Length: 129
Ligand SMILES: CC(=O)SCCNC(=O)CCNC(=O)[C@H](O)C(C)(C)COP(=O)(O)OP(=O)(O)OC[C@H]1O[C@@H](n2cnc3c(N)ncnc32)[C@H](O)[C@@H]1OP(=O)(O)O
Image (tube, rainbow, N blue to C red; front, side, top):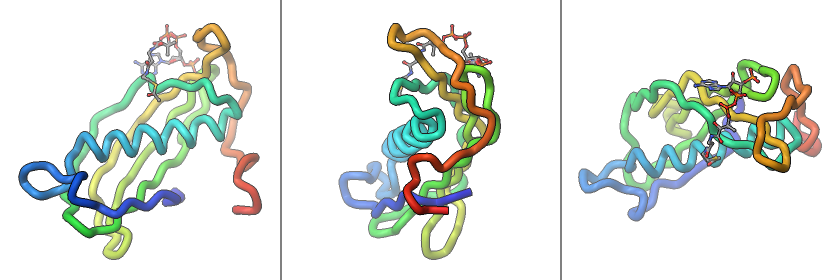
C-alpha cells in the first residue's frame, strides 16, 4: 500500500475532546479514495457507492502528521474496490482502517458503465514506480 497523502493535524481539525474529528478524517479519506479511483479508471465521473466498517483504532492529536494509504483490491465490471489505512507518519501507529470502499464508474448520464480495467496501473503517475 502506498501512503501518498500527508496531513498535518491543525486546530480546526479537532473535536471538542482535542483529538482529530472523525468526520474530518472521513472527508479526507473519501477525497483521497475517489482521486485514486479516478486515476485508476481514467474517468473523472466516479462516485462513492459503499464504505464498509470503519475502525478508529487510535486517535490523532494536534500537530501530528498522519498519512493516508489506499490500495485497489478488486476490479469489478463498473466498480472498483479499495482498502484504506491511516497511520501516524512518524510512529507508523495505525489510526484507522477501512476494509472496503467501493466506487462506481459512470457515463455522462450518471449511469454505471464498464471501465474495462482489471489491475492497478500507473498511467497518470508520471515517473513514479
Ligand atoms: C466522491 C463522492 O463524494 S460521490 C457522492 C456520494 N455518492 C453518490 O452520490 C452515489 C449515489 N448512488 C448512485 O448514484 C447509484 O447508486 C449508482 C449510480 C452509483 C449505482 O447505481 P446502482 O443501481 O446501484 O448500480 P448497479 O446495481 O449497476 O451497481 C453498480 C456497481 O456497484 C456495485 N454495488 C452496488 N451496490 C453495492 C453495495 N451495496 N456494496 C458494494 N458494491 C455495490 C455493483 O456490484 C456494481 O459493480 P460491478 O459492475 O463491478 O459488479
